[in-house]
Image (spheres, rainbow, N blue to C red):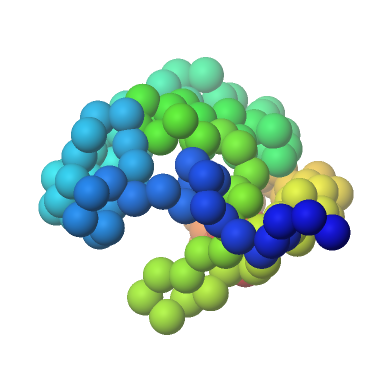
Length: 140
């Protein structure tokens, strides 16, 4: 086998801006504070967009979640909307290995997203419970 299959050298998802605290980005942002602000603003724009285009009948899919990510972060990161190709952790939380993500997303779509979206009608607490379950499974 040639090369190191575990190397992230040359992988744009693993590249940092000079200084090493912020991922390489299209805006040349180098500080965590500025990146937090840029990401927050980008998320707000994406949220407003999807409030306009999604309906109570929208069935969420893995592709739609990738579209949301691309819409939110496409102006910041070249790889937005793609499944990650590096392992991630943040604040002590370790996400599943990168190579498991496509299969885990297929399973998430086949189970929770198919069963729970569109969100079934119910009381406010029932709907909140469905949203919490979907979000928890997505994060896991």
